Amino acid sequence: MDLIGFNVLTKNYTTAGDYYSCGQVRLYNDDGYNTYTTYKSPIVTLGSTKSSLLKSKGISNYKYQIYGETYGSAIYAEILGKEPDLIAAIGIDGTYGYVRSSDLTPPAPRTPEEAVAQNNVGDKLIPLYDKDGRTVIGQFRIIAGQVEYITDDTID
Image 1 (cartoon, rainbow, N blue to C red):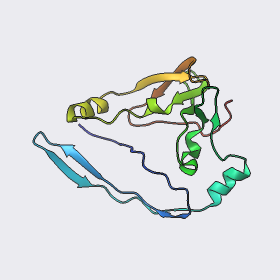
Image 2 (image 1 turned 120 degrees about the vertical axis):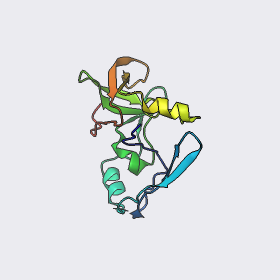
Image 3 (image 1 turned 60 degrees about the vertical axis):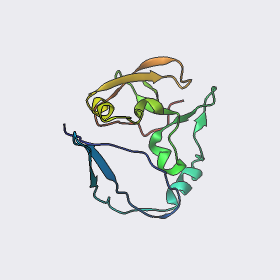
Image 4 (image 1 turned 90 degrees about the vertical axis):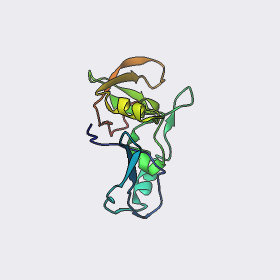
């Protein structure tokens, strides 16, 4: 089995500074686990300009819909410190709508067998919702190993 990519969300920092990431992965070998250390990412400098730019556009948080869930583009997640509950997306037929952030991230596997099963799913279709988060208006395709978001927060 080959693993092309794996993303894990961690705490987001919104203060200026230099940041990098690195990690460890534990792979099951039929007799236990082997632990490997990942390469350190390039250092990224986060300045206050991103926050200032959003605030100058009047964006300090996501919008809330009638049921109290947040919605909008995930492009602001790094700056706002979290993803919205409903993330702006384009369905397989070109329909603009929202996907639930919880549908994009599978639950953490409890066993090696569950981890293998999650990695062997392939492409997956999930519901595309109206901003109410209840009305299904289409489908969104998660391509195995990749998720694409729209970057424009123009859906209302």
